[in-house]
Length: 81
Image: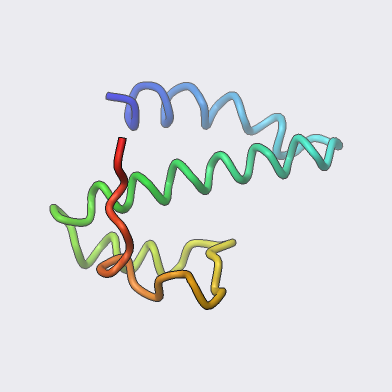
């Protein structure tokens, strides 16, 4: 329910003003929160829709390409509550 009712319905609408605003620090914090939520959501959805989530994961902007990061969602760590 978080994904559909809290994140998609509420947070995405609320954060639009911040992302188009003038405060760089707030924009960076909002973008990081969006990234974390989408990243975790894709990892949770991956067992049910592996090809779609892999494609979306590969195209996510801001994905860390450092040495410790995963090249594929298939080998990324599953989110733990």
